[in-house]
Length: 224
Image (cartoon, rainbow, N blue to C red; front, side, top):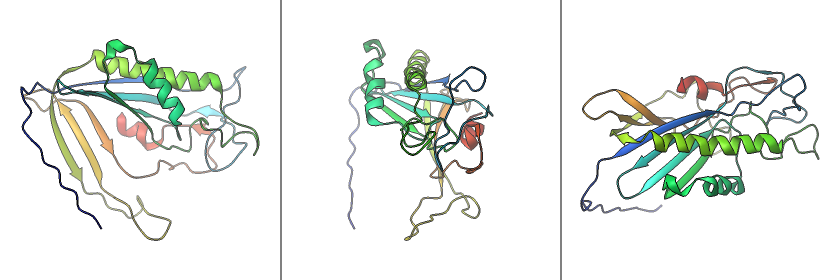
């Protein structure tokens, strides 16, 4: 075991907390004369047949007057570090982002972005043009978030969630956090939410392995 101790000192000349949000559609084009879209996860040779609901890059930028942090969540199974670096480098200096974090929902009903799933075992399913669209979408979502920066109040909440039928660990030992963690940003002096960050350690795989329709799964419905 280990212990962690953090000492906080009052900030000198504290500034109003600001937050801004942005979202960009990163849905692939499916069917017709478009290139095949290979769905990531479970197995190879799973070509997408339809777009069930939109995929998005959603961004939150938080600025305390001293540090500006950007977070982007992608409806994707994964996004390599080299691609994250491309997002960081593409962020114009005018955005003044000190840190940029890019994460994926690890959704198994989204286009392949990592090269592990395609038409066969030794053929990548990654479409370079779609990868560029996702990268550009992440940058555009951050740009929107910066342009929407405004003073906010922040609340952090932990919501207890039942595990039955929702969350499980298929490997021994059983180690997971079933609860929902929420950071909510509201207009100062009101309860009107302008945006939120939600963390839940649950795999978005509700449509499972035979599905061929591209979907954001429950993550998209939760956002809407």
